[in-house]
Structures are given as C-alpha cells and as structure tokens.
Image (cartoon, rainbow, N blue to C red; front, side, top):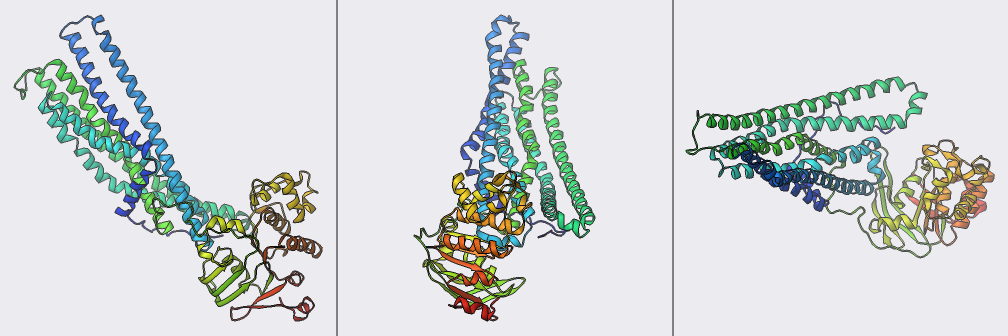
Length: 589
C-alpha cells in the first residue's frame, strides 16, 4: 500500500496573495452566471427600498390621512408585486451562483487532472492515491460556497449598506449617519474572527484529506491487512483520524457561531439605536432634526434599518465559505506543488504526430534515476528499426519494465528518446496514446464485465470486433466456459480472474486498436506453454507492419523475435541478432 500521511502536528501554510489572485481569476470561467448572481442582490436592494417606501406610504395614508382602503388597492397590489419580484430575483440569483460555482469547479478539476497527467506515474507513486482523489474532489468542492454564495454576498455587503445609509440622509440625517457609522464595525470584527476561521478551516481540510487518503489506501489493501493480522491496528488508526476530523469540525463551528454572534450584536445595536431615536423624537424627548418627523419618514427609517444590516448578515452567514476556500487553495498548492495556470488546457498541445505504419525507436544517452533504486540506466543507447520485433532480456529488476515505461512516457528520464524521428517529450499526449500501445506486468482491470474491460481499447468497437479480439487473445478459452460468457462481471483489479486470464483480457484491448508501436511487458508470464505459443502467434500476427518490443524472461518468446536487446551489468542496452537455435545454447534469462 502506498501510504503518505502528514504529521499530526504539521501546520498548513498560510494562503498568500498569489493564491487568492488565482482563486479570483478562476471566477472568469463562470463570469456570465457570476455576473448575474452579483447583480441580482443589488437590484433586489433597490426593490427593497421601493417596498419599504410604499409600505410606509400605505400606513401613513391609512393612519394619518384616514384614506379609504379601496383607494389604496393599487398600492397594496404594487407592494405584493414587489414582494413576489424579490422572491423571484432571490431564486434567480441563487441558481446563477450555483451554475457559476459548478462551471468553475469543473474547470479546476480538469486543470488538476491535467496536472496529474503531466506529472505522470512517477510523481503519483510517491503520494497516496486516496489523498490525491480527496484533493480533486473534496478540496475543490470546498470552493463551492465561495463562488456561489460568498462572492455575491461580499459585493452586496460592500455596496448596499453604504448606499442605503447615504440614501436615508435626505429623509433623516441622524439615522443615515448612525447606520453609516455602525455598519462598517460588523465587517471589522468579522475579519478578526475570520483569521481564526481560516486557520481552523485549514486544519479541518487537512484532517479530511488525511482521513480520505488513509481510508482509501486501507480499503484497497484490506485483504493484505487481514492476511497479516493488521486489520485491528488499522481500525484504531482510522478511528483516531476520524476523531481528529470531528475535533477540527467542531473548532470551525465554534468560530462560525462566534462570528454570527458578533454580527447579531452590532446589528441589534444599530436597529435599536434607530428605533430609540425615532421613538424619543415622536414623544418629544429628543429633537435633533429641527423639524417634525412624520409617520411616513419614521416608518421608512425603521423599515430600512434592518435592511441595511441584511447584506452584512448574509455575508456573515457565508463568511466561513471564504475561509474554507482559502484553506482548500492552500492545500491544493501544497499537494500539487503549484496551482494550475488559469487558462491552462486539459493537455498541453505537442507536435502533431500521425505516423503511417511502423515507427523507429531511438534513445541516446538514456539515463533513469529513481529515489529508491538509484541509477537504472546510465548513458544507454537503443535503436529499433521500423517494423522490427525485439525481445528485451535481462535478470529481474535490471530495468526491463522501466524501459517500457520510458518509451510509453510513463516515467521520467534524461537523454533524448525519439519515436519515428520525433522527440518523445514533444509528441501530443492524445496522439501518443493513440499510436503507442503498452501493456504492463500487472494489467489494470476495472469493476464491470469482461467485455466492458476489453472495450476500453476502443469504445466504438462492434460486438463482432470485440469477440474477434477476445478470440485472438485466447480470452474465449475461459470466457466461453462461464455462464454469461464475455458478459461475466469481474471485480476491481480483475478480481475473479487468474493472473493469466487478466493479462489476456488486457491484451485483447490492444488487439482492438491500431497502434504503430506495441510495448509488452511479460505478456505470457502466467500462461502455460501451449497457451503462450498461441498468444504469441496472435501477437506476431497483429504486429505485422508495426514495431514490437517485448520484455520477457521466456526463451520461447525470445526465439520468435527478429532481434534481442539485453541490459548488462553496466546498465547499458546491448543489441544483437541471435539465431533462434543458439538462444537456448546461451541461456539468456
């Protein structure tokens, strides 16, 4: 199991301005929906002013002017229309925010997935797969509230309270000044609470990532843990990580409740101040206006006072979304080393590559170093002609699989490798995967049917083509004995099939394709001699007009190739043509 777990006491790095700039720039992906989500609260605020003024006018005419109810029917209908319109706008704004957030999250996940593909298996082997999955799923999901709720609320909180306070000054200067002074205090104290919320969110998301990675890796290695009697110990570790995650969650909730309490306290003070001022003015105990305060003006001020703080309340309710987003961006940057460029494509375009027929393979000064095994190749050379069939021989662990991975661009290297005269590093990713077929020692099969696993080679293959590929790879030898044939379900990683059967299913995928270069790593390792001979006949028949390289220990397989390449003790590749009859004599293994 590949398990990478951060130290429990490790403190995540703080979010720097570059990360926040990247986060804001991502909003351009869903700018249309985001723009609508931002504009809607501003328009709704204007309708709120009209609604409060209309309600104050209706009450003034009913109480002071004693206007008949029938004469105010139009005003009442207008008031009901404003309420309905505000409800509709709230729905539109929420839907637009959700749409913008989904578009942005999808774009970020594509960029992160592209970053994984560029780093390759070498980089991913050093990290827990569960933690990487958590980064792309859970950490990106933590950005949802920032774009769908916090950003529109932040714009509304910055504009609406000040605009309403200034707008109330012609009605009553004291009320306008009171609201203008008290409203900014709320964001100030919220920011103080926000620093703690950000730190708590970072720790919360780090705990979530650790728990996800640990759980995924333990689940994947559950059989091994049971066989070695380590299941109970791992249960204790997972329980400890779960308890830590619960503790972090409660810490975030405590700070969220604190920021809400700060908001409600200052909002209550502001509304109470306006109510106290209006009440004292009406009973004649306070006179700061120099003129009489009418019922309409007083009611209008009282109705608008809570509305001044409403955008701030909305902002406070979603303020933790900002802290969660900042923590998620920090974790993404730490996990991937850097954040993907804003306008980066899913795959970096390379040289257009469309070989016709077989291709030649050359390597000059090939050097491969690994952290655990040191140098595997040192200044090695390799030449494979187009349409050539080559057996790669050497002891176990000498580097045969590594060379296959290098030629398939699945492992980093130094030196120059060319396919068909084009540098391997410059070839477009999609073209490389289309024209180069590689089969490793441990083929990867997925939960599904045998047929669906074979069809991964070419999803548009017909049933007849799929069956022909299965027959060529000797899959039908065991599939036809099963009750459901090729439609028999198998488990993840080919559970339910033997090693040889799984390898043949993976080989059938290649037979569905039309590659120019075929790279096979021990394709007959689990097969008996008769089946091995049949499979190799099918491989050689398929490889006609293509370039074939097979890493193998089997002398029977090597005898069928045109040429042999050996990896010697100096980590160099020695190539020679050997007569089939002398291969057994030399005992190359």
